[in-house]
Length: 186
Image (cartoon, rainbow, N blue to C red):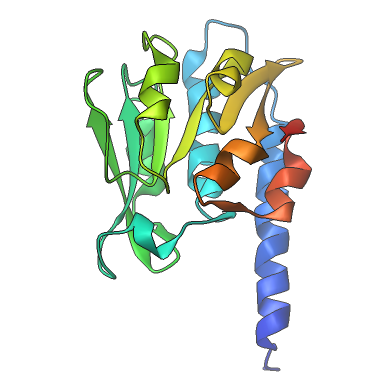
């Protein structure tokens, strides 16, 4: 069996991720009655965001610390997100999911999904330490200081990015991620 050069393996792996993103991007949603399909797609996006963003070393307590995906507010994902991240890694870190109460401001999460029902999103986001990717719903979330906002466009789950907010938090977004976003703002 021929050996594949590391650069070719990386390019091949990147192509698989892009294809996965494209598949999720263009997967049509059922009518509003099937919310679970929408949040299954969003959960898969959350997992894939971990592969296309570089976190500063200071975002983690130590070399063995897991990569934490946190859900602030009401959990719209149910057990789907737990199934999607089961056995997955973000770099060399195990992925775990934590659900937080509405009043707590997380200090150790690397990816924070903020539910749309949260009362003062802008205040909550302003209290976060650097190194936390914030993901929420709609343009209002980006205006409040969020980094990635899910939107429904022609019955498909898409996302918009505030690159400026991510950079301010010390996160580096892959060009591949920026390419598949519906909209990228500074």
